[in-house]
Amino acid sequence: MLEEIFEGLGWQSVGPATRLIDALELARTGDFDAALLDVNLNGEMSLKVARVLAERGVPFVFSTGYSMKTVLPADLSGTAVISKPFRISDVENKIRETIATHRAGK
Image (tube, rainbow, N blue to C red; front, side, top):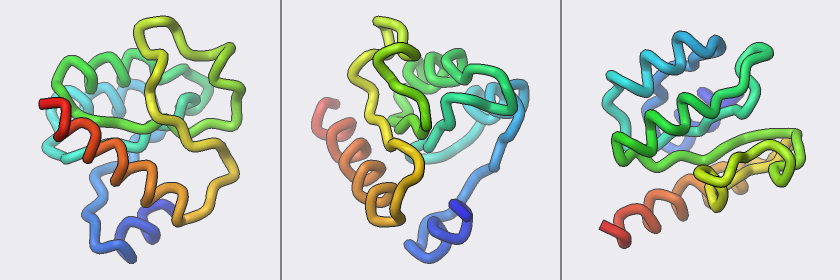
């Protein structure tokens, strides 16, 4: 579904990575402007992936059905979050906002 949303927005999708090991590889080596990162990747938390993206300076947004207050550690607090279920406009707006905030902070 997200690939179709991104295509409809004229964005190119890299992935998806549904397993932690694949997401880590993409985070380490992928060439992309931003990432939408599900907190739960097939039963594994994606916090390591978020840290790799942060180290590389790649803006990202978490997607989750969890309460983020109980999930995010202190070093990732303040990360943009889209709660599931979400609308297409929510995804687009949050990703655009995150990229703009990242660019303004450089």
